[in-house]
Length: 210
Image (cartoon, rainbow, N blue to C red; front, side):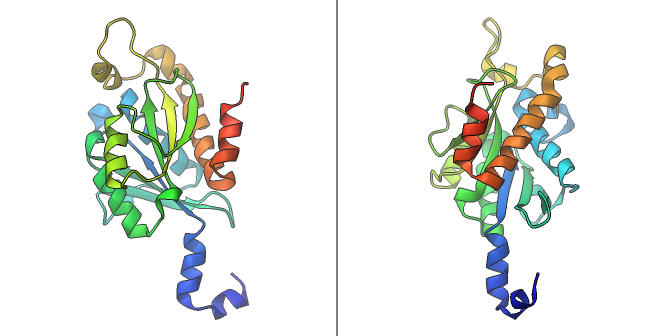
């Protein structure tokens, strides 16, 4: 921060910092029994992001655990959060975080599992409906249908006639676990791209054919 930054009013300095801050929420369920579930892949990506920026999740005044840090010196700041409640009540913690940090919904990124995308695939979306995902449904409701960005981490459809609700609450298969580190890395890259380059540039990068 230079001399003229210090000469500016405190509120203006705080606003300048806030303009470069993104709230990133990884959806999932709390507790060790859910940690490896497909439904918790959003929180797995949050863990990957926190590791990259050298941050540790800590208890917070909101109903979430939070890790904060910068992508790079002078770059975007990430406030990475994992709600303490269950998936279908994600909206309350997200709304509390948005209010606490005074972050506009346009700079909210929610990471979640997606049945309608093949495993090992990442897609980005801004705004729209919930697509039957109960966690996203609750966040949409809590943010008045806000145009937040979704990082959709593909887990694929269950095999045969297995119920989708049972499928998402099972751990990844041994074959999937072998590829999981690459998937988590790709999803974390997608979050970083949105924060650094914007949603359009990030979509062009991650939606283009390999």
